[in-house]
Length: 195
Image 1: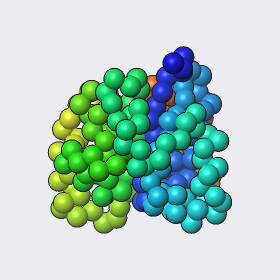
Image 2: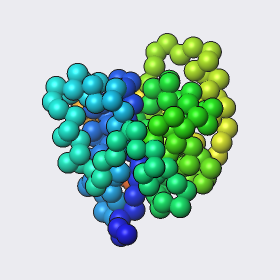
Image 3: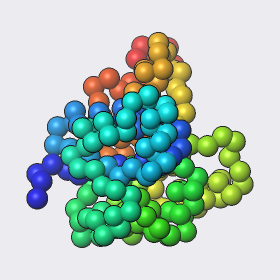
């Protein structure tokens, strides 16, 4: 067994692939951590559209890459050791499946296991506008103490100079619940104080 702490990272077909890539880069750079990646087929298509390069390059950033239909893989069992799970970007379809406990594929099954084992589950949700159904699913999941609903939103208090700055800040926020904090993450210091 690996001595590294394992974080399951899953990607669905919603927009936000630069944030996924930044998260994987930060996990890889964090001492004592490794990512196990699950990508849906839609995620692979969206990655190639948004990044402009093959989705296969993601496997370089992960210790292991699992196919979404591998429902018998390690993350489908609570006895498989992991520190938690990050879904980024998280589509409303995947959110609904997690909310319903519907383990149709490895992403949804791994999320279901993460919830039942009381491990941190961070959902980097992406949709606009949000319907009452989306909001209900998010509200009910957020009532579980181990679940974080974290929409992929921009932050301006850090005075970002580029899209890359905003992407890195968002990725760092998504990793905070697991105790991973990159050097360039900027915390709020209070009004009138320099970051």
